[in-house]
Image (tube, rainbow, N blue to C red; front, side, top):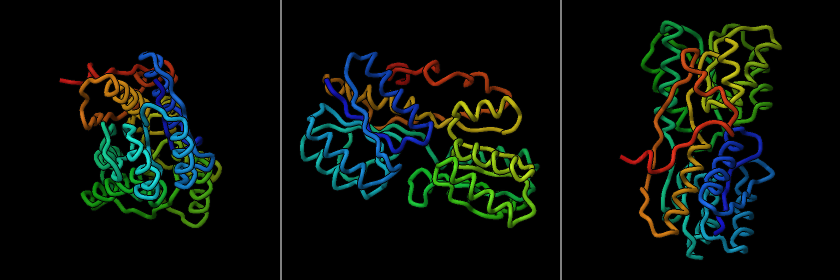
Length: 294
């Protein structure tokens, strides 16, 4: 049995973890995974071409995180036309039916980390938002959660929004430029951890101080929390998502029933509990579907 697994890019450690999650599921279940990643990160044309390449290999199932809400729809429709089942993770698929969709609530987790930051600031402060690609589903939902939480705290002033594109270097460079042009800053609310690492680098280079939070619980963020340079993150567990999406694809092919949606809980990580995440991805625990079902 061969499972074609599609992640968005090679730059975000969360997708490195997702590929590992799919591989760990395949090893456990005795199947083969074929990984497809666009060389140009988050590129719809490249992901569409990779889907067509995978279709020529006739895999038994597709496990897919689409890079765009609509721009891969044509290729997704071709998967459906070929009669090959799909499971989705991180981003939903609208263009064709899916067996299972696995994710977390981006809006809720963004609100959770934002409210934690605002409480740390005692409800007052100037906050810079660093968001992901402007058309990304996760980025848009997280930005919505950030704004909603800020609206609840009149003492919080959002001083700007930077699109860091979920890329460390981009977030670092654009934050550095913002810091050159702006004087006052108390905190940075960052939509993923690899960008948060870039923001921390920009702050150090500019000899500026600001509280930084992120999303994903990647190892670099856990280390920064342990060192006290980053306040907190929230776990968007792409490795667990891809593991479950792969497991559900295989179970479906074996004739077993699987849930149509699986939503992982929001888990905030700070100095009080970071040790639970202070492991390389290969050593972090993964839950089987049967352990999650009631």
